Amino acid sequence: MRIQGEEALALLEEGGAEVRGDMVYISSYLVEKSLKSAPKQVLIYTRGGKLAMRLGGSNSYFGTGSDCPYILDSFTGERRKSTKRDVEQATAICDALPNIDFMMSMGLISDESPTVTDLHQFQAMAFNTKNPSFSPH
Image (cartoon, rainbow, N blue to C red; front, top):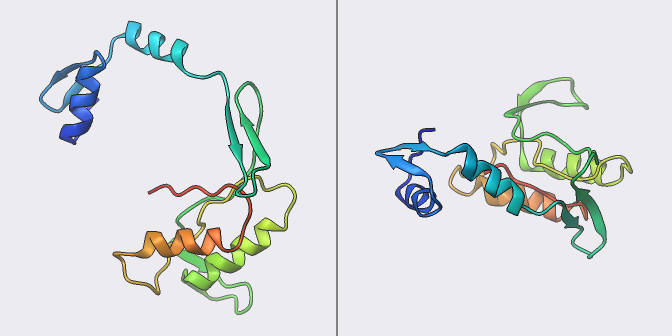
């Protein structure tokens, strides 16, 4: 695979991968060794300390998608750019739904500075759900 990032390349090489420039070659032996050393399950908790998900085996969980630049406004029927308020409202609604196990931002916030959008997305989720929240960024 092609990896861009000196630190990542160094870590992969240190871990036993063959590195040539920005190309990384990982042997099947190294993949199998890594899989054997990985935990069989990962436990994910709510902010309140309650077990929310036991990742592993055949368990399935459901959550929201992430990073939609536009929203279909349910009040006006208008297609428009997502705002922080949209993420807050959607998160609060999903928090009340018993079949939603985790949250992602659902919208790319357009009404904040692009340099801090990720922080506002996370804040909108954290202030409006007790479920585990993930950011793809």
